[in-house]
Image (cartoon, rainbow, N blue to C red; front, side, top):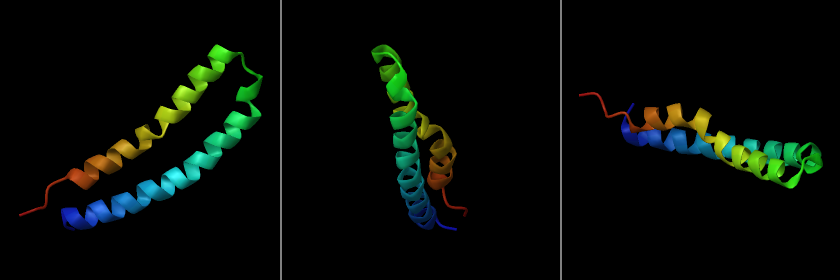
Length: 69
């Protein structure tokens, strides 16, 4: 598989993942986080904003792998 194809597939997967993760994170934030004090809310929102990167990193590494000769 060429790098160009991997980038296309990876981009589609990342978009689909974010489309699913976003509403899940918003639902979690709306239901549970609203009960926390302000500083707790800020910390949880920062974590929710960054945690989606963790499962995407291996996919990005795969996308960037050079083509085989």
